[in-house]
Length: 183
Image 1 (tube, rainbow, N blue to C red):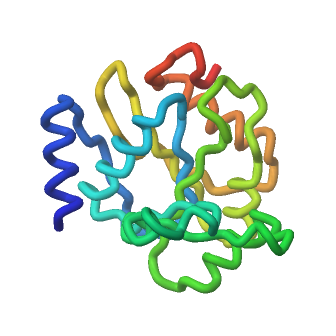
Image 2: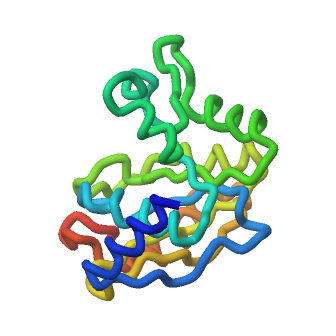
């Protein structure tokens, strides 16, 4: 409740609007979040998810879940990943889907950095394939001041072709720092 009130205030003060929502059949998915070029992305994206009442979760290193921010991060949807046991991230995320039969939308930033990255990490794709869930394209467009949900991609197994479709969508969105956005 407090999160939704804060989200409305943030969007109103910044002049942002929400475009689209997760459909009932897509509330169990991997959501890509791009272009990711600023720490502000997390604030606007998290506000958008509160406004959508979306079951959004995000992975974070287990070490970040301690004092002083662990409780807050957990309430915001953090899923701790234990990397000390040589856990493969894709396997850990697929396991999260199997352990959570309820609606769960795990957000990932395929660029893996806020700097320009021509080669995206493909783990998000293999998580969706392994968990049998779609990839929903979440976005922030700073030029239009929009946070939204774009198309849904069902992984075909042709990784390069599917990722090119995803990148083509994100090329139409303006990042906070456009020079670091998707090209």
